[in-house]
Length: 345
Ligand code: SF4
Ligand code: SF4
Image 1 (cartoon, rainbow, N blue to C red):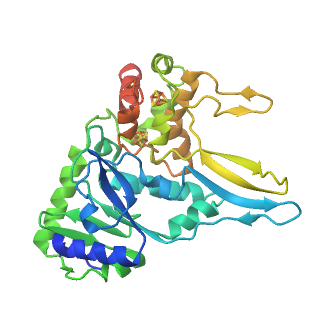
Image 2 (tube, rainbow, N blue to C red; image 1 turned 90 degrees about the vertical axis):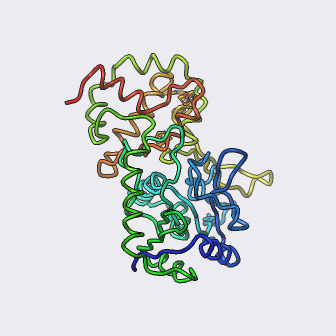
Image 3 (cartoon, protein in one colour; image 1 turned 120 degrees about the horizontal axis):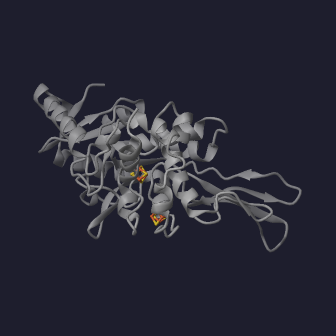
């Protein structure tokens, strides 16, 4: 389908029409910050936001969810959430994080709970209109995105461009009254937005190509930076919680008071938290805070890339930088320190 152009007032009409018939979640102001929440009116939608407090992962992997219920002598009952929804205003780096999660939850043990939500979602992405204080998507090659969304919106002043490469996106776009084929001038305005964002979303500049990071970490396991940084780490897990690519969870069975029925739940966990690696009989194999701090970076730039074709599992959203009170979590600052000490190559 060709790229369409729609005026901002027609776009608001499109969003209000969607809200009347669909479950729409969109970016909204929360004080002077922003977050995803159910949308009740197009006027609440803020596509000019810098970054959301939480990434959109919670709509695919909720902080807690019941996986199955069970009863004595009876069958397990899978609890799948099959509601359809539209997620509106997802920035390119978060789309890329969702694409990575899709790959991880699809491979090996197919995760029916995640994938059901994912298949029932339509993603309306939007190019970044305002850089946040800590974004470094330009350094991570995640400032613009070419796939993984159903519609991509680009603000070109008085209008949006709407690109709908999927059937789901095309069906939604067909409902946009007033949308017309984008003219060459509008398309070149979009190219200018992309070129600008590829350079400007870079509040922290990584000193190497992200593709080099696995090789950098291969020689950094015993570097003193892990101990140095971990000295002031609170082990609060905030860097895990706000990260769009952190997906670790814990699974627990709870039996009800009747001792006949119960449920299996899963809840977010985080590798920085004490107890994350505790196993029976009370053995904790990554107890030292420095080991946990190091593991987070290795997971992002060494272990997960091995599972998803070399993609680095940090998309440069900068949320962990903003969330970390002692200011030690910034992946760029850690990696640049390693580059300074160990060199490139
Ligand atoms: S590690 Fe930090 S900057 Fe990278 S994706 Fe996670 S929260 Fe964003
Ligand atoms: S947010 Fe900072 S202090 Fe908290 S666990 Fe992460 S690195 Fe440690």
